[in-house]
Image (cartoon, rainbow, N blue to C red; front, top):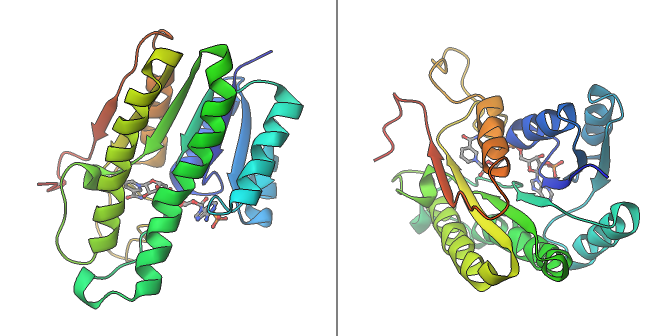
Length: 233
Ligand SMILES: NC(=O)c1ccc[n+]([C@@H]2O[C@H](COP(=O)([O-])OP(=O)(O)OC[C@H]3O[C@@H](n4cnc5c(N)ncnc54)[C@H](OP(=O)(O)O)[C@@H]3O)[C@@H](O)[C@H]2O)c1
């Protein structure tokens, strides 16, 4: 059977581009997001070559069901991409508790729940990759309106390193890709804003592809990519 990949946040932006790329290259893709309409449209665009699942990655029950489906339908899991994410704008001092908690739930609890399930499938066969979609904000913070986002993405980098070390002798490679600003609905550019130098989601998808294309015993642990004009520091 062809390789099997689960991609969360697959209905839009980076996750959608990654889904399309892996489907084109004949992987079995399980595309995960909440919006059923967008998932259906994605399935049509990929000419039925992807399986879609409506799952809220912050729900333990729904994540357990997702991996039960992967086990029963495919019997294996080669790669998990924890891509679903949110950015709730605000500086920390005037952020509502709700916004803080939503950011942490999607950006950290989601990867935690999915990673646990994936490791349980990968450990017995001593093989697999888990790629977390961080951000340049996993490496350098930005002041302004992204206090919780910075904290969650730095946390995701720490989570990645922790799991990588926990499972390194189980044949599982855990890594993080850290894109700079990318033209997706999340960043929602204003009408006359110059986005010509922003990353395209397809470029980030190629980064994920590269991380999956090295030999099984190699972990490309951290990829940081951004438009040369971005002031990330
Ligand atoms: N765009 C950038 O500039 C940029 C830069 C660096 C890193 N990133 C990271 O890249 C990842 C993807 O971002 P994007 O820019 O492609 O954003 P996007 O276009 O807004 O896509 C976000 C995806 O996440 C899904 N999602 C959100 N909450 C979810 C939940 N609770 N359960 C399941 N799926 C959920 C959304 O689908 P539903 O709403 O249907 O669930 C959607 O498919 C994020 O982790 C983001 O932090 C983005």
